[in-house]
Length: 146
Image 1 (tube, one colour):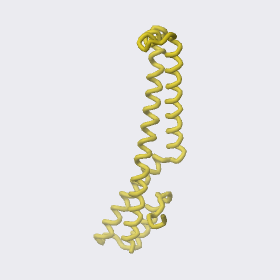
Image 2 (image 1 turned 90 degrees about the vertical axis):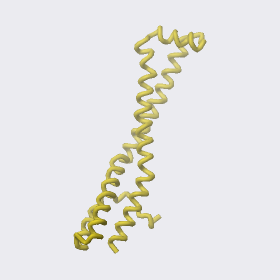
Image 3 (image 1 turned 135 degrees about the vertical axis):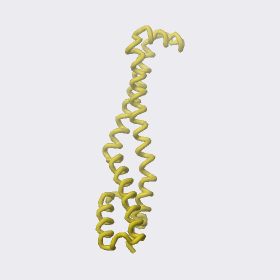
Image 4 (image 1 turned 45 degrees about the horizontal axis):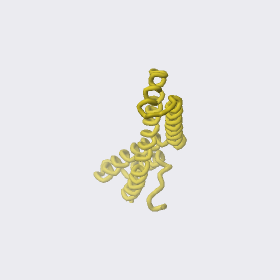
């Protein structure tokens, strides 16, 4: 009976990880990438000054180099906002912490299931450990409750 409950909880944790790992990675990539690109967009004018913007203006056949400044600043702002939003979405839901907790609990449940199946632990002790491990991932809904 306990082995079945362990397997059920592991299935729920694996399902959660299958959904949330990609989401965490996507938010992290948007945050880091957006910040880096925003910095790169502002680096050219910051280091090159008007020579840089005038050169870009000539390359793109723009009549006024202020258009270059405005476009670069607009894209930098948009990327900065995207990076800030991604960071805040990840932090507001403690996504990284939850994914880490789920990964840890999944490994602990796997070890408990193996130990229980080989008879190296009595059922009462296994039940205590199961409750302890499951408490770490209380945010993960069981598969059957969906």
